[in-house]
Length: 119
Image (tube, one colour):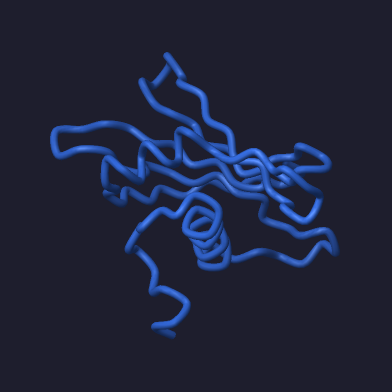
C-alpha cells in the first residue's frame, strides 16, 4: 500500500463469516478483479485477511480478526487511503468497500453496514 491507514473497528462476526473470510477467494477469470487471502499471525494471535487486486496482487484492504470470549471480531482495518488518481478514500468508503467485497465474493452476512437493497 502506498498510503495505508489503520482504524480500530471491533465488530463481531459470526463463525460462518469467519470461516468464509479465512477460506478466501481466488478468481477464475480477469473479470473477477479481486483475490482474498488469509494467514494466521502468531504475533498478536490474529488472522489477517487481505483483499488484493487480482492483476497486481497489491493489497487494498486488510482485516485483522481475533477470537475472543464471545467469538470472532474484526479488530481493525488497514486500507489504502488514496486511489489510483490520488483522491483520498475516507474511512466510511473503505469500510463500505471491504464489507461489499466480503458480501459479494464470499457471501458473508456481516451486518455492520446496510445491505445494498436496504439503502
